[in-house]
Image (cartoon, one colour):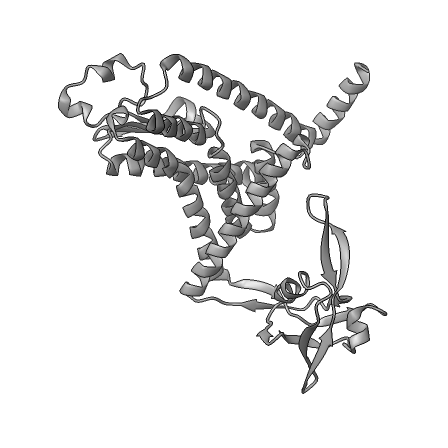
Length: 374
């Protein structure tokens, strides 16, 4: 019962909402563009429940690992769609202008980014944000802060005249300033003191294990935190920054994967998502909100990969059609789609292997097989 409540339910909720928003993007833009939508499905396989309203059949299917929107004329090999009467032909996907078709295809990933923004906005508006205050808890002897006269308990209130409210704001000011004198204003008791500190350059490893240069002054946070509440405007501003931060980080991870900096074995999939969702739900179901927002950003970026069968691959086909003035030949599209399907299946197998390798029973089994086959 606990497994169902804390792992299966969160997994279905997270994946269901992400897929729904993705397909909703395709669906709404298609409808607005006058394209006839035949099916809107959550999941794959046999239908669990289905209802038809207007031109569209809406269904929930047994396998909750995806979804799809089927439009009239979407399949270029559909002979029935080619022989439609003029009024119906106007509603065909293939008969729309290239830019409209690109908008329909791109709407899925865009809606995933919108979902992330909505989730972050709601989280900041309702729960605010807990931040570490810029109070010094410890000073390293011999480092710039110690030499400048900073003391334990000092609270940094400004750097170079810019107000500082959180520890992260202070780090953002210090880290890129190696060798550059900084005027730091601190509150010590009921006094304000302004000291000049020259951050010391240091080579450290970033989150990808690569060496990068930063700057240190030799202080450690006291660990005290405060909760900041945001109004609607500030919450949306923070949500925009947070969404963009995760877009950049996801793109950076993808680049590092192709560069070989991050090994492919670190990539996770649905099983890892379900495991993480379950762990977060055990602490609090509200933890699923930022998690869902981050996964939604990941889904948006990954769907824009220029791989045939994904949204990004279809957009590439349409851009080629725009340049050439005609679509690629059916044979070329078929070859590209089969190649894309092969790559996708290969990637899913690798991801599934990675996910199973993180589960102890499978980890032991893979290790045994590895030893057995030498």
